[in-house]
Length: 414
Image (cartoon, rainbow, N blue to C red; front, side):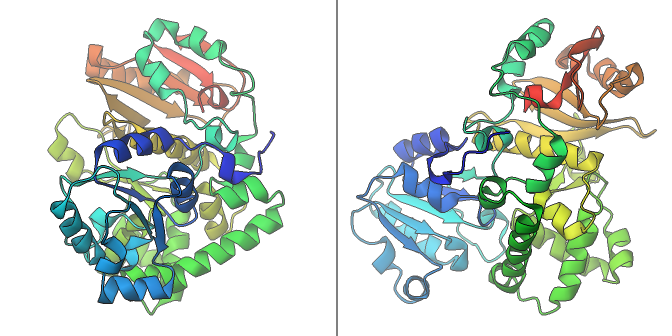
């Protein structure tokens, strides 16, 4: 695989969505884990007439706390970076917008999901549009600024899927060892600039230490950092499994309420991802157990200390691509997994445009007829509402396993 090393020139999937929202809304909030490239994206998409201030600068942080009008006053457009460090600044932004609604006036970035932070009392409802910047997808790393071919699959009649995937650009959809992609993850520096595993390990270790010792303290006061890191490792060893807080507490010697609170902090920081169960009744989705994944497979492998990617990491790569695609989309799509009471399960379900697309992921180079069984059960359950099933695998086979399940190499889609 050819890696493009100039990170600042690589287009990002959310670029067009950000530009469109700045044209319409007085404030746009771009959130995502630290080091996903939010600042680089902001600098690339705004003109030199914008003021840029980062709350990582202690002087700017002090001004945000003592006299926020210094930052939000005036008529110039302004970019405020790492706003989660002083959530009360959002009240000043709200007042400024209410004094004069000017499209694109505020571009706010943050390394935490502001809507999940308990300290944030102001959501800028009706005044801001929210975007999430996930670590780089495979398509972004290759310089194409895209996610997988989900939009094309949804727009193409099922019978045309094989031809669609067979005729993709060979450069854009070249074969690759998925395990290497999992090891490097999607953060720009380890994904693009560091070629050796030892170099990436040093970067990941520094990233985790910075998160624990500094970023985490912006969200909550936690003194037992070794305990928190132990929970992170336990979570990384359970990729693709149902979230069981009691089990996690027992294995890490932590009370269940502490596990619950710390998992919420990891999710707020975009490090942890909880995938909800799909159900026709949306209320039931809130009740059923979620499945646990990580925001970046490179960090997950580093924390787990196992080194060798497994099938759950391939699932995680597909989910990461789906999340990046979903959150850059103007029309909202829902993601979930499907599981019956007797254990039949489909890894991912896309709900978009009133239709469902079920996806199964197998870390096997030879898809078998039996691998299609649960996809077919799903289709039988939801009938015409469901597209054909998509079985992603690690081999080269692109064929209809059954009349309603297409087996495709993962790299043909991502």
